[in-house]
Structures are given as structure tokens and as C-alpha cells.
Image (tube, rainbow, N blue to C red; front, side, top):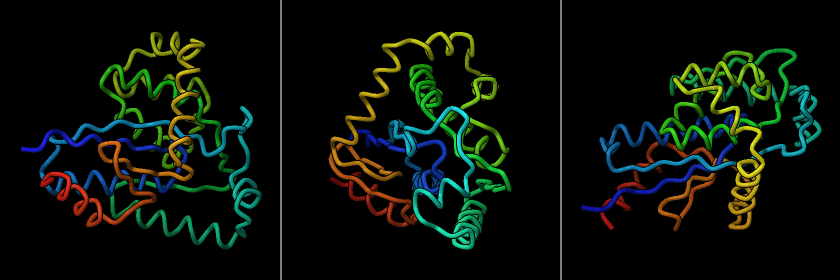
Length: 214
């Protein structure tokens, strides 16, 4: 029998395609019944590392960064909302929605990994941002989301301002970028091969099948 498949998901908590890609990967794993053969770890990537603490209006941000018109943005959001609904993930875009700085969230995800609750916190933060109109850079919100998945917020916050921990997250971001990761989600299998973007469930199944048979 093959050893566990190590999956690294390089992503950001404010990346809609990361939510869709992960939910499709999760569906593939569940339908194949191989949950016990997978070791999954989330790796940090900031879509907007220079985002100010107060964030930026989402429409303005997307227009500035990608040159998309408001109409194109609305179409894209409707498409993502439909994809999300198929996967039981809620996208609730709203007027005045703001893009957030996510560095603190990534530091807390490292803490959650040590506690065995990284995926739970990741999905909690994605749900908060996309489905509950919450600012995931706000420390009061982060505290609530930590507690919602049963993590010790007081302990987590001592780590949040630890300079070594913050440097480690920056180093991890640099490491994945040095390997050529420039867009997310990037799903890395056994640190040998990777798929970029939110792939269909069948594509994930095909790759996982090949890995189990190798």
C-alpha cells in the first residue's frame, strides 16, 4: 500500500478560487474514500502583501489590479457564487466589500497547524470573509474565529506578535515563490508535482489515483 499522499495547498484566505479548489479537492478525497491516506497542509501566500491595514474597496482593488470592469466583476462573482453553491460553500458578495490584509491570518494558521486544526481555521476564515461580511484582518474577528474552532485565542495571540513566528511565515511565502508559485491555489502533491487553479473534481481524482498506484 502506498504511503500517505502529502498535499500542500498554497493559498490565501481571501482567494475565492482557493475556496473552490479546496472544496473540489475535498470532494474528490471523500468520494474516493481515502481521507486516511492524505496528509494536508496549508501554505501561506498573500495575494496582496502590501495591502494597508484598513484594506481597500474590493471593486476598486480588482479594477486597479486586474483592469476588470464592474460588469466583468459582477459576472465573475455570480459564477463563483454558483460554483460555491454546488460545493456547499457560501459566497455573499456585497456593496462596500473590502479586500483585507491577510498576514495575521497566515500566522494564526501556523499556530492552528501545531494544534491539529489548520484546515478548520482556514475554512472558518474563508467562510467569515466570503460568507459573513467579516474583516479577517481585524483582530477581534480573528479572536472570534479562533474560538469558534476551539482554539485558545489568548495563546494564539502571544504567537501572533512573536517576531520569529512572523519571520517564519515570510520565509515560507518566499520559499514557495522561489519554487515558482505565482498564483493560487497551487496544490502540490508529495512535493513533486503540482496543479494550479481550481481544477475539476475529476482531475483531482485522476492525480490521486495515479499517486496511490505508483
